[in-house]
Length: 273
Figure 1 (cartoon, rainbow, N blue to C red):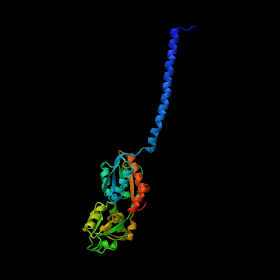
Figure 2 (figure 1 turned 180 degrees about the vertical axis):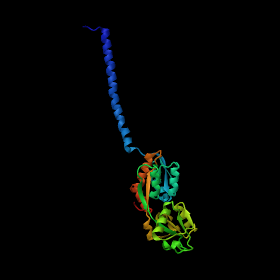
Figure 3 (figure 1 turned 45 degrees about the vertical axis):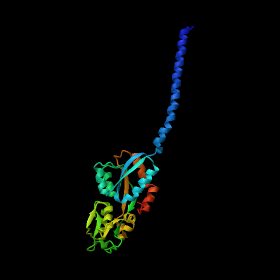
Figure 4 (figure 1 turned 135 degrees about the vertical axis):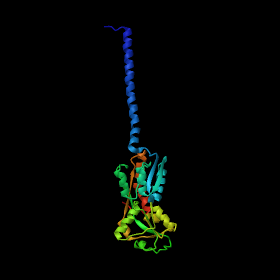
């Protein structure tokens, strides 16, 4: 049967339209595929961390974390690490009450466990350092302190951390292990406050961490004591569950627990967990 010319033209036109539509679908697929690698590479972690986070850290970490934060920002332009230092127990209270923290680094596992039990941190906290107590005295050592037992002598003005603070809990452990009862003239909420009492001349001696004495330089004199080994504090770090920048929080934690972070901590006198 012979197809009229007008009908033939309509058939040919329909074929052209169909071919064009199919060709458009074909060219669209490669364009979509071409976009996938960039998206997948971003998901694989090639994207640089950005934005800002707030790190809550134990007072004894002030010098090291200040340096670690500066190093991290230098290596990752566009990031900002805000730091807040205090006694670990005070920081736990703040986080529990909704303070906007992204990372928490504690001077002991006990305070970190409080947040873990309350489901306020992500995953399992990572231990990244250890620390032990030592005795800090003024350079002239006016009370002639030479041992832990000397701190209990009448007339010796000794300052310690409050029992809820990691350095205070460690002090109580050593008192119990040695059968020594201290009568401090002051109990402070952070180890840096204890050190401040010694450097200002308000105390004859203070129980602080070995890292604090090292950082203080010639402002104080160290009186080490063997009994300190009976109370070794392990420092854990974790991301806070309510963090709004978990990628940056994870990147900073990795920097602290990685080789570079370990070197900074070791140089400051911290031990390894």
